Image 1: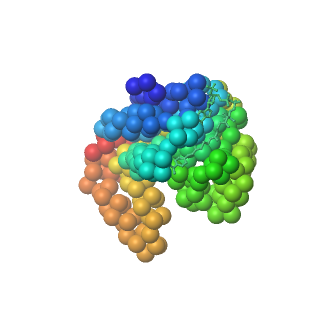
Image 2: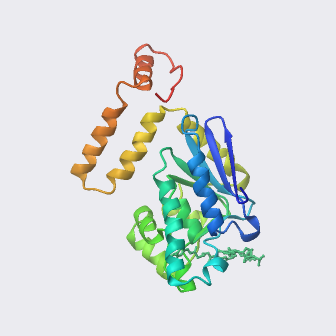
Image 3: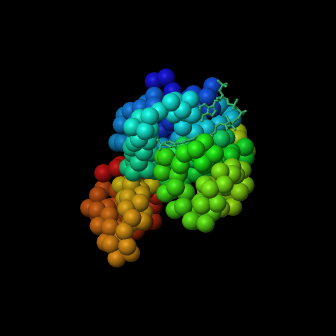
Length: 258
Ligand code: DAK
């Protein structure tokens, strides 16, 4: 792979978008490589992912403006679909994904971070949806996910005005869960990922699915989704081990993802 690095440490996989000369902007090749990387994740052994950008300046500075500038309507639609498919794959990926936002997260960069389950960022992070200043709408889900995360009023203000916001404001409006000095960001992401990875994997996956799927339907249907995923945990080795350990007043020996 030219633009994606993937490393596994323990039960955590780290995906790094590695195109620092263009501030990790998303061109077609980056999107294809990211798609292939997600397909290759060993879900038997990896229990959480971290997504970050190479270098100290940028997470992802958006979709590649050079590549987009000459697209026809049909090509623009195809590019949008390519991005949307991989972003959706990330959003519905069976295991949790943490975005460690280490700098610019503009346009498609903000959008890819919003396809992750959790966002944390460095103090130099900058978020924004500058598309209307380029004559386009956000095309990788920004109009939909930003409104769901920070609320309709704030999302409309950010998108209509194309104003970038800094890390402290992103934290204040709930776009990120925490802000760290740059050098502490990846250790914090690793620690968070490890705290997820130590829990029962089937239960964690079912929680992700319950939250994601439940948000798409009304409360009556959402509760049924939760019931089914709750029931699905029973008779698993991990459910038996988790509850037996509690009753025997001992620590869980190991969750085995079965
Ligand atoms: N695309 C391509 N190259 C980029 C880039 C981008 N988004 N952002 C930065 N670069 C490149 C620069 O061109 C420059 O390359 P060289 O000139 O060195 O060859 C290099 O990265 C370093 O950038 P700067 O020299 O500009 O660095 P500065 O520190 O001065 O400025 C900056 C950093 C992030 C403020 C600035 O680079 C900037 O404003 N970048 C553009 C940010 C932006 O507007 N991002 C949103 C892109 S629009 C859709 C699908 C998707 C989308 C929309 C629709 N459908 C098909 C419907 C998504 C749209 C977007 O994401």
